[in-house]
Image (cartoon, rainbow, N blue to C red):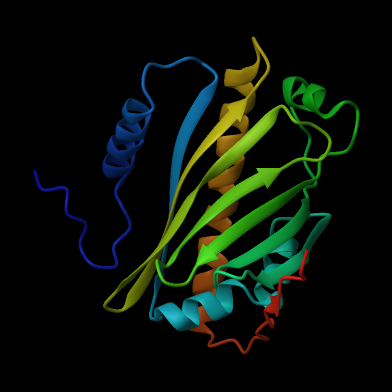
Length: 212
């Protein structure tokens, strides 16, 4: 059976499971401390340039915050680095009830984190990392790739969640991965709505990184 995905069609559940298994296999023997994940957004009726314009607009940012019922989703930084890459920092404060095992990682503080992405325009890919100021025990990192096809654009995330606490890591990581996947399901739906409605959006201006 061919594993080729028809143009602009999302992966089937079987293909997604097969890819997830392959990611875990590349990670080596399971330790219970790391969880690999992949997420894919498929946006139809759009080219690469328009996809990025919508995806990074403030209007889309606020729509995601509203639909996800976030307490806050704020752009903190948008700079062009000396090598031409683009760094973004977004502060996110979810409105969720956390499992006790996850809440215990926050040292009694409310959950809040920053998404930091560094985009390479030449490679059409970006590294991403999630930083939680309340704890150094949680790491979420990975790579996102933009893939333009006739009539659509795919944004594919390959990532890893790692919780550095013996005994609860597996539970916490699965919770984090499920949250990430659920959030991007919502992002995909909203992005397609923006495309279909031909929404007008404001493009943020990149500023040079201040000299050190």
